[in-house]
Length: 111
Image (cartoon, rainbow, N blue to C red; front, side, top):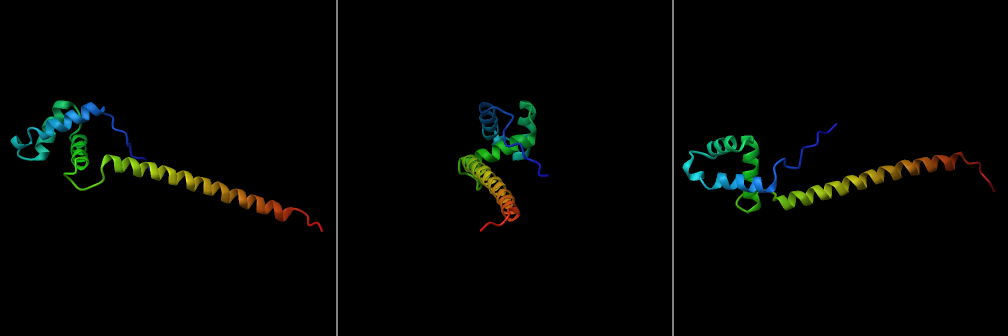
């Protein structure tokens, strides 16, 4: 069974924007991005990894880093959901046609 990744952030949009800004503004005063993220995440009460992911996604959304933007990710999720629904509908039709074919073969022949 596939584990679904939680695609919804537990943090409100305002918090995410402010947290990313808190990393960007004093970034020059830290030795590395990792140090800045650890320090600021401790102050905000979130995990450093969550803050790093938010920072990276903000850079992608602004075009400063390569990768899919939030809008592109949302579109991909939407297309995957639609694709999954089509596959399910197709499976239902396959099973129904097999059932009807069997019923047709079991029916007595009439002239």
